[in-house]
Image 1 (cartoon, rainbow, N blue to C red):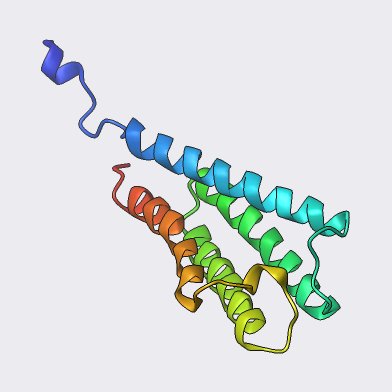
Image 2 (cartoon, helix red, strand yellow; image 1 turned 135 degrees about the horizontal axis):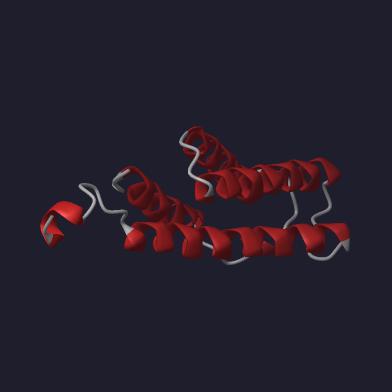
Length: 130
């Protein structure tokens, strides 16, 4: 048996897994921090419904990213749904009647930068070998 036959046919792609773990961990840390601010009632808007919807979506993002790190394929769909819904709530605050400090001086397209990290996570997840 030589070295070439002893190697596995589909080696695991460590780089893709590290990208997923690193970005998902950063994203999870950010949303946990935002939830802790919600619990401590910091940086809140005047609309309680808006705050509750955002908190629920952040919990969905945390759970789905945890499942993505664990390799569950269906979690990509829930991650995109949760993040997309969170971006929609940002537009709700920007164009709606919700008074939120984070909308002051922001361009409406700036909320779309929240799609960059999930796109990289999705690419790394889908293009890894099993």
